Length: 363
Length: 115
Image (cartoon, rainbow over all chains, first blue to last red; front, side, top):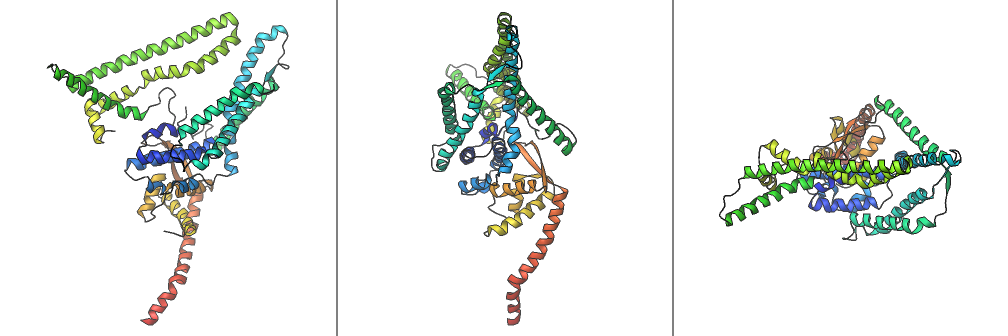
């Protein structure tokens, strides 16, 4: 899964975060395509985090006029830049259509005994056409309406923009989708267009990669965050402090009862055991969810056929995948385990690690 | 520092010169410029310069994870960039020599005559 600037934003604090939010809002209410915008924001978040780490005020990086900075930073974006990124932007839509086409063919296979033919089998394209067009319209309208308020309203934030977009986006789909007339498209056209686009895209990309650096693989993506293991640095910084407070409160209670206090080593040992138990529970939970998913899908396939089973698998996949991700993260790359590893690398306990973080020397 | 047009012309050459010294990244370039006296330059000024140089083929960039987490662009100069820098330095020497003669030459002659 490709890295995004959003996952690094939590490292920004104070003025850096406030300014970054305004710049983010300005960019999101503009007409820049998503890929170019993501690249610009990643460059900016790297600059901000580096400057913040070196203790420089944000004004040294962007000047005192945030609005003027935004005008310069997001300027020089021409229609040529937009055209250049268009093929890559269309890729998710092409994949979506291709997957729909495959499902339509699976449904056709189950209906062939009724005389249906591959060349006459049709699908209704109005749903995805409307969804795509509506999505573009909503983001443009909201952008135009909110842009004048970006630097004039203190309450307007990227989160509010996201919520407004979601509400209007989904609201429109629920209200108007049924009013759309059916737009029939032969499945073979859907398959040809989407499959043809994907084939052409990857062939041309491979050719350009080979010409530029001798390999058909793209060299651009050098950083991926595992879909299963995104690390939230904010939680990792807070966890030791939470445990330090817990340790102190525990010892306060023991002192009141005139009982022997827990040492920091003993507390660290308990923390280590907790991490091991958490990992086992997370692994077992993940296995149970996957087995449950498999049993449901297989039984549906036996009852109603392969096509229905495949459709159910797709639905459950999107519902269950965030849950599986969450439980797997608890096993593979949990914040607690990361903190434990950092403590062990430094050769100190979690309480001492918390003290170092508070002093600003622990990283 | 005022006179934006003058600054823009010079900055592009200066940025290219910094990149020619070795692979570098945005914050480092800003710090170097500041060290040499280009104060109050921000990412908003630097970024368009880097974009123009990249589009013009004078620099290339590779992306890698920075020590603090985000993906960072590291810039290095190309052969075309080396040629462009040489042209810039040549033009800069000629122009500054002539400009100094025009701007300060008359005053210097007057001072010499008074002396």
